[in-house]
Image 1 (cartoon, helix red, strand yellow):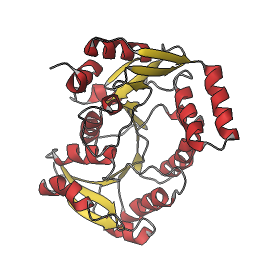
Image 2 (image 1 turned 135 degrees about the vertical axis):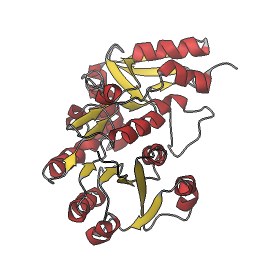
Image 3 (image 1 turned 60 degrees about the horizontal axis):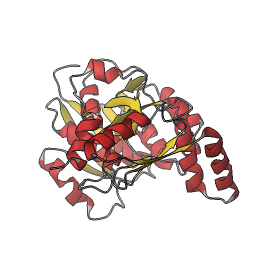
Image 4 (image 1 turned 120 degrees about the vertical axis):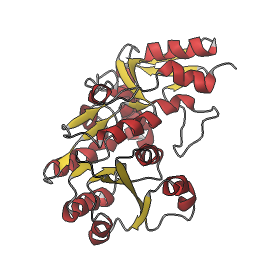
Length: 307
C-alpha cells in the first residue's frame, strides 16, 4: 500500500460485529473511516457511534434501497467492509455491491465472518451468501471472505459483558454450567473474540494483496476442550449433554414439520461442527499480521474468573 491513508467504509456499524471492526479501524493511523448507517435508523445511533466520530470517523446516512444514494456516499472510498446479514431480503447487500462498483471502490469484503464456506450449503440461513459471493467475484473489484469461526463473546452471556453485540447462551452456557454439544464434542472449532476480529481486519486493510479468503482464529479447539477450560476457570463441573448427528437431523425435520424455522436454523448450525465445517483451517491473518488474539482461558477468566 502507498503512504496515503486508506479510505475504508464499514456497512452495518450498529451491529456488534460492525461496531467492533469500526472501533479497531479508527485506531489505525493508516486508515480513514466512513460509517454507513441506514437513513431510517433510530436517533440512538449517533450516541452509539459518538466515540467513533470523536476519533475522526465520518458518519454517512444512506438509503439501501437506492443504488444512487449509496454510490454517492462511497465516492472516494477504497475499501468497503460489509457486516450486513441479509438472509431474506438481499436488496441492501445487492445494492451496496452495485454502488461500490459504480463508485470505483477497489476492494470489497462481503458479510461472511463465520465458519468454513462449506457451511453455507448446509445452512439455509446462509444460502443467500452463496449467490452474493458469486456476484462479488464477478464484480471486478478485489475481494476476500473474512472467516473467524464462532464468536468467543457468546461465552460471556449472563456475565458483566457489555457492548453492541446482543449475546445469548450458545452451545455452552457458562452461567448455567451446562453444554449441549453436537456430535461427540471432539470436532475442531475455531473461536475468536469480537474485538480481535476487528483488530485482524484493521491489519488486513493494509495488506498489499487480498487472497480469496482471509481466515483468523483466536483459538482452535474442540467443544470438549472448551468445556474443560470453563470448568477449570469456574472450579465447577458442567452438566454436558451430547446430541448425536442422527438426533440433530431428526430434530431438524421435526422443526420443518412444525414450521419452526428458528429451531430448524439452530439444528443446521449445530450440524456444521460434526460435518467438519467449524474449523478455520488456514488462519492466514494469524501469520500475516501482528495481532495477538485472546485465548479462551483468558477470555473466560475475564468474565467468570473468581476475584
